[in-house]
Image (cartoon, rainbow, N blue to C red; front, side, top):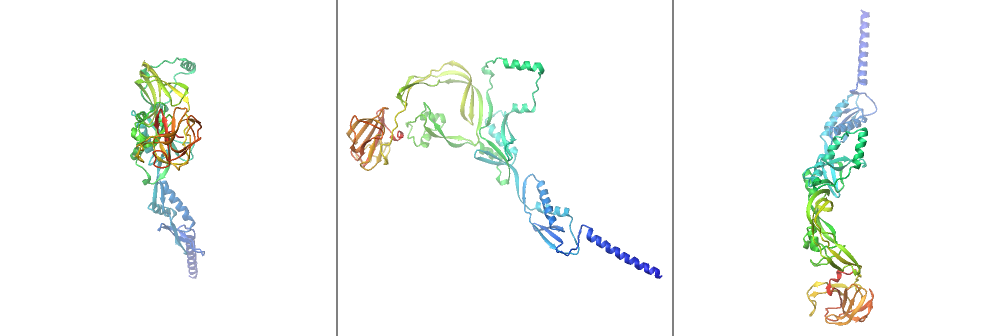
Length: 525
């Protein structure tokens, strides 16, 4: 009996030992419990954006779980997503405590991040054409936009826009290309030569020596033969918010609408204001209004003058070539005969022109609706045109300078209210107000034909110049030259005054061409 009692005691002790060992193993080796340490906090409650997402054993593992949660959010969308992700932790020191499975903490974080989306940036495309930019939501919309610009001039829809990655650019930049349907078909189905070996060589030889046969009018393809963008079109991939995107139909309207833009028209031989008006389809009144140098429809224009004109242009330039059969009246180019003894403004028509008639095939180039060049590739004359023949001078006419230093322009050329009794209401020169005694100089070299008193002019000087023009200087106080005297440009010829019919001290200055006064301000250098 004593032996049994001792054995029972030993078994109880052994059982207690095994239980204690099991508890120790359970505490120190199972992952859901944290071991007891005497070094401070050993469990941490994790909060993401103020929401509890789990319990962890160390602070270090939280950063890795959050990184993986953000990766899962990003992988679930093709867009660029911005979310709030503020992590806070509350630590505690426990003898033993339960921690959550990392996968559970991860899923909780993903749910919180998904509900905390701050902004989603959509993968978009920015189309840039010169200074014009528009943001579209997809590459398909970019193609729709650019195709709409091409389709304005391609009724048969023979040409198509394609986008390709620009390998020379560091950023993701797409470039546009316009291809004919035949080119697209050719790339899809490679042409296989039916000739091989010696047969192929023979075919090549005959093709190279085959004589060219002149085409008949019926052999030409009428219509659009090439089209492309005249401006550099760049398409850049970007991430943008929805409110930064433009509806594709609105973008099409913006890119194709015509806006008025100022251009400079250079006057050429034979131009008149009425002719420029017809050529540019701009009313003459508007041309005069836009150009300060023009007073009315009779204003003089010269070869090389630049006139401001307003031309309607869309945001994008479409360059195209069209082949057309045309029957038309035509004129020969003017034939000029140079005369070295005449000045450049002197001309005489030796032969009047008459129009001819012809049939042609023309290759015409356009920028949008504006014709920029035309090449005749086949022509058949019905009856010939007679050219205009003009004799013209080559001598450069003298330059005319303002005949005094300073002075205030007090009266311009043309109609005016008479400044004083007896003065004309149509002013045939210009006036500069200046004190009596101001030096007056010759506007150009010439010969004095009058130096004396003139009715209304007071003391006056007339100077004839080599180009047939005459200058007049009036209301002078003192004459420093005499009749028949030769003067050089800039030579002092008089002093200003207030003689004759005058409302105050000033210089009255005229330029006469062909015996008639013209506006001097248009001829002074």
